[in-house]
Length: 172
Ligand code: ADP
Image (cartoon, rainbow, N blue to C red; front, side, top):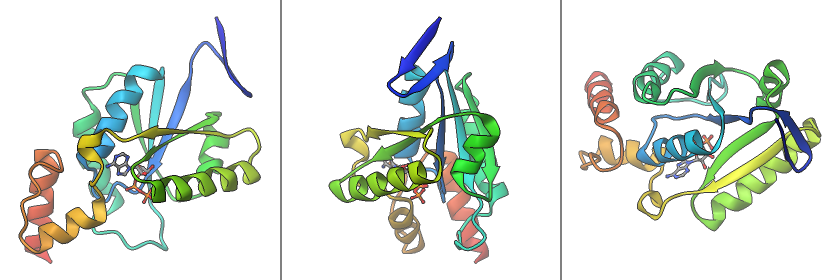
C-alpha cells in the first residue's frame, strides 16, 4: 500500500523524526511520543548533542533516561546526533520531522524552523502536534530551575527523570 502525505510520498510506512534536546525529557515530550506512536508507523527520536549548546545532562545521560522510558513503545527508536537534523533525515531517508507546540510563541519558532529546514532540503516536511492542555506550561529549562530551587517537579517529569535530576544536582 502507498500512502501519500501531500508532497511526501512514503511507501508502506510513515516514519518520522522527533528531534530535541530533551534536557531533560518532560511529561510533555513523553505525551508527544506516546501520541505519535499511535499515529505513525515508526518514530526516531533524535537527541541533539550540539557542542555549541551547554546542557545540564550529557547526551549519554539523556539517552539512558529516554531509553528506559520509550522501551514501552515498540515503534520508537533512539538516536544521538551532533549535526543538522536535515542531514540525519538525508542519512536515514526519513522525510518527516515532528515537533510539539505549546503556546503561540512556540508556533512562531517552529514555523520558522520548518521553513529553514525546508530551505536546506526541499523534500523535508514538518508536522506540528499541539500539546495536551495538561502539559502546556512544561518546559525543560523551567523544570531544571525549579528543581535547583528545591521545588516539587514530581508532576512534571517521569519519576526516573526526577531522580536523575536530584542526583545530578547533588553532584553540582
Ligand atoms: P528544543 O529542541 O527547542 O531544545 P526540546 O528539546 O525541549 O526543545 O523539545 C523538543 C520538542 O518537543 C520541541 O518540538 C518542543 O516544542 C516540544 N516540546 C517541549 N515541551 C513540550 C510540551 N510540554 N508539550 C509538547 N511539546 C513539547
